[in-house]
Image (tube, rainbow, N blue to C red; front, side, top):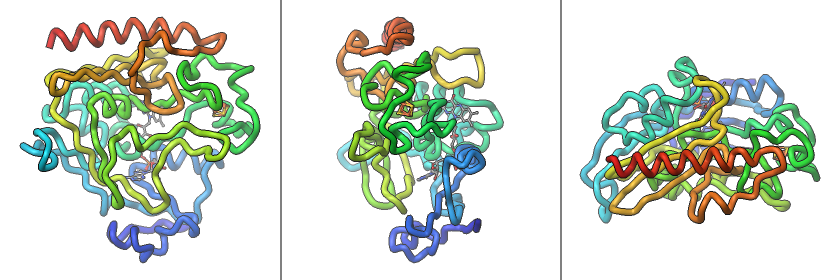
Length: 295
Ligand SMILES: Cc1cc2nc3c(=O)[nH]c(=O)nc-3n(C[C@H](O)[C@H](O)[C@H](O)COP(=O)(O)OP(=O)(O)OC[C@H]3O[C@@H](n4cnc5c(N)ncnc54)[C@H](O)[C@@H]3O)c2cc1C
Ligand code: SF4
């Protein structure tokens, strides 16, 4: 396997970098905290790894206007690490806290925010290479099997629980992404897998996340329930943000994609052995909204 360095985002877009073509089996690599374990486990195949650290911005800056029509906020390079975000006072509280509560200090020092948004499911059947629907098969083994940590929303086709604390925070904060091809709300990065298309993101081959624009909220918070106090994925993570007088609540660990809570938590459709997540979610949403009111 080759290790290559991307020369520019334009080259990636044009296919001028040999490594940019999906046909070449090249995989972008930033911190590698997700890519390397997947390669080792045989869950990801690559002819080449493309080190994108030279072409993906990594700064964090406060801007008066994120786009001409918008108010102020923070522009975050997709290459910024979780460790940098968790301690930067320019970053809204919900995102800082989501980063602080994720993974371990070593992983947060290596892991980028862009890579975090694109991490694969932690579903143990998928990780153990059971031929389930996300692997292109006909069955979701979690439905009949062990699903204590699985999804309580949109879990009909695949019951995997999206593991990113950071994505839930960005969803509540109504962040927008800029890639080398388009601008999109963070919600549009994700899609629920279907019979016809098993992908959980809309990112195309050769497309890189470059920057994340986060509008400045009046108030924001992130709360996380996990199996132990440190270094655990969310059982349920709840992000809440009030921006321009509008409150948005988004959840991690409850659906195959980061979940914007538009109806109530009572709209959840838990599996037989994970209904406890509904109660955990209800309590955390209540606490998060109370924390927003306190400012
Ligand atoms: C043991 C463990 C525990 C963890 N716990 C948590 C947790 O509790 N909460 C949580 O939210 N996360 C958790 N994580 C996830 C961790 O935060 C991510 O692995 C890390 O942020 C990924 O960043 P990276 O730069 O290392 O990504 P990489 O491994 O380099 O890349 C990850 C994926 O993103 C793609 N990619 C990377 N950057 C870009 C880009 N700019 N544009 C397009 N594609 C890109 C890669 O091709 C790859 O598919 C955990 C990870 C581990 C291994
Ligand atoms: S929850 Fe999704 S990833 Fe897990 S076994 Fe079912 S189809 Fe596969």
